[in-house]
Amino acid sequence: MKHSRKNVERKAHAIPSIKFEQQQLTSFAGLVILQRFFAAIGFTASLARCFRHVRIGKVYGRATVFLQLIIHLLLGYRDLRESAYHRDDPMVKRVLGLKRLPDVATLSRMLKDADQKSVERLRRLLRRLVVDRLRELALSRITLDFDGSVQSTGRRAEGTAVGFNKKKKGARSYYPLFCTIAQTSQVLDFLHRSGNVHDSRGAGAFIAECIGLIREALPTAVIEVRTDSAFFSDELVTLLRGHRVEFTLSVPFERFTRLKGMIEARRRWRTFDVDRSFFERLWKPKSWEQAYRFVFIRTRAKKQRKGPVQLDLFVPYEYGYEFKVIITNKHVGVGTVLRFHEGRGAQEGIFGELKTHCAMGHVPVRRRLGNQMYLLAGLFAHNLVRELQMQTEKQSRSTTDNRAALWVFEQVDTVRKTLLQRAGRLTRPSGKLTLTISGGRKLKEKLLGMLDRLRPAA
Image (cartoon, rainbow, N blue to C red; front, top):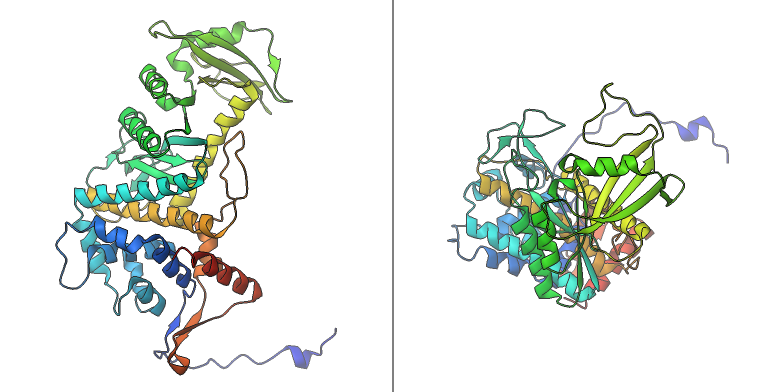
């Protein structure tokens, strides 16, 4: 259909005058979903129990301030000072059950005064919410992935140190170790560490603790563990075998030079797919007591690897191929083992989402416990969005070889932009509180559907 220029163009030179009035307008109408969701899982009461040992302040309780920090991160803010931009939003106040929100100084003071007992109780709550979901799913297999992630900072925060940091060399950092659940794409727990420690520092005890937690909650489930080569050791392999855990671990070539000779002496490789071939052997290093299954994989490289003329002394090299070795106690085919082990790459996606959309990389205060509490707020934000989707959406997948998440999850940022950041207005026609939301048919169907599915549990 054609239109005349007169009907299309308009003069836009006049600048409208701007006026601000208190009309109960909200930029985050979608928070009404979180309000019902928190009530359904009893989250506010659970938070209050985490801080019941702390003397309540004159106005705001610690649990309320911590919940505000979670909402702050869910809305896409990072720095504590940015809380001023949603301080007057009526829906934020309603979710928190307040008439007036704490200011920036109160948020900062809560982190500065964080104590060890509060942090430990928050960690237990984080674990309990994840374990409750696993109990409800009643899975026959639960897969734990372990890896560390760097938290860099320009300030001299307590407990930070200069360590390996390929993106910000020389920066001080923390280097926490995380345990994630592959089936729900949630963080089960973390071990907070300084930035100058090796990946394996404290890993054995932490891994054993996480395994024990899952074993206690689901005694009949098969527990699986995946790690990269930084965690490889005789002690860890023995620990996993002692806990009756199925595992795959990447093997570092520099620790066992004999592996290089095995690969270079091999002449016949069994074909796995177009680009990969393999062989396997039952082998053990001299200092080990028991032999294990070692799987050797050769991958055809798309281009010649460039580097120094002198070849690496430890890593086997052949023009056109790259190599890796996996140790496992699984009694399945090599293809299944390889797909299972490569599935641990999904954990990097979780770390990326946590850093980009839940401010995991931000270090807000100088005290170590305060920074741990801020990290916990980000982990809660991530896990709660996952739990919200699991409660309101049908399971998308069954168990796959690579242990992909059982739901096709939307990222925190997608939920934020499509649901939470919606303009709305609170009114009381005929004395009944009403939230009017600006949105189309698709938003209406999705939002009302989620609220309806949350109602029975409330």
